[in-house]
Amino acid sequence: MTPDRIEQHIDTRISSYLGEGLRLDEIILNLNGNIESFSKRDSFIRVKKRYLLRNWDLIKAKKKYTTYCVIHYTRRVKDLEWAIKNKEKFPNLNDTKLFGLVLLRDKLLFNNRVNGESEFGRVVIQGNDGLDFGPSLLKPGTLKEKIGTKIDLEKDDVGILWKHWIGQA
Image (cartoon, rainbow, N blue to C red; front, side, top):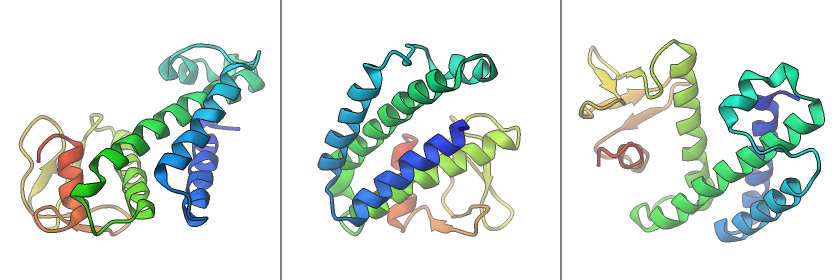
């Protein structure tokens, strides 16, 4: 199984839990249980994600699956904890939409890395202007992501959340 497939599997489970009506804190408890269970396995190795990915072809399948699951579960626990902490700032968004924003963030960051940009890269705003997610200031406008999602950075909850996420709010 590739890292992308593992991430997709875990994210689909989280979406499924949300669809069943579980709260974010209940999902975090479930994910923490999975982290504990996977961490106790003999096939778990304590390495950083970067090391695991760089040596993916050299590591046995069971070890890389177990280890990557722990890494991604841990990442999602942090994302869901962030969503709980900042939920009151976005009263119009339910838990499913908040998790959708996490997935949108990942998609935007991944698309920029694939296109050879820096970690936060450069995303085109509708019109001639650019939106720099790096250290420079965020410019107001409408973000048009590759899948066609439009976000007004000054008015939409998603745009405000994105600005908050990158520390520009």
